[in-house]
Image 1 (cartoon, rainbow, N blue to C red):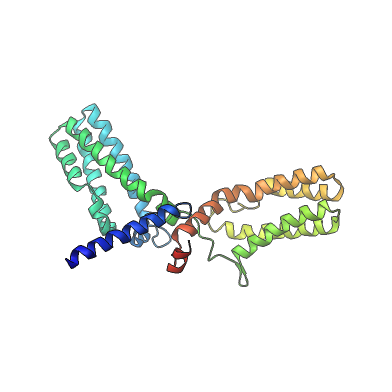
Image 2 (tube, helix red, strand yellow):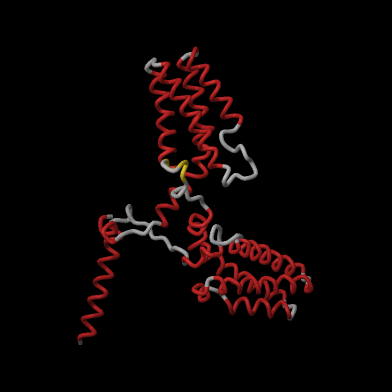
Length: 284
């Protein structure tokens, strides 16, 4: 009898929790996060993007197996099926907790069918295996890419007493100060703010090359420097319309394009990978 009451109580608790989530669905987002052990197969913990390259191999091998099964080319099919089997099983070696997610039986049947030259069976098992892969990708692909392939600016320092985040805030203020001062007719302050912005962009560029190694002058580039020069001229002798056009162009070239790549990804990563305290969970 006591077990009956206990079960009823658990059901009530689950219903209440589900009701709360439903009522606050505008503030609730459920996300499956990958096991932390996955980090060891990505940079910077690993010298190479091991996990990523294994996924690329699997994608290529899946395509090859279907291609040669349709062509009824037993020799090439066998070669690619063997490679697919090896790299598929490697998933469990790298992340043991995901072994239960793998369609081991399906993979075995596909390999056996390829050995027996049963092309129809290969294609059937291939389709099943693809569905299994897609299911895992639906749960983890986006969050894994955000977690391990998007940049992390939180530990970058411009100098010993200036963080990357604080420096970016100062650049934003300088851009706005140029607009405010120009609009209010304070040419001196607009030009001095532009000079500070120019210096700040050069300083920022010194951190950009840490990742953009192939382009040692990734930021600011020639187009940005040309626009900075044009903006200086317009602030000195141009019209308000010219000043606004040049400043808008600079904002697109020097701010929006980089933010479109980096800030969106970094912001999403920060929200999705930061541990939520119980008090914050209750609050939201």
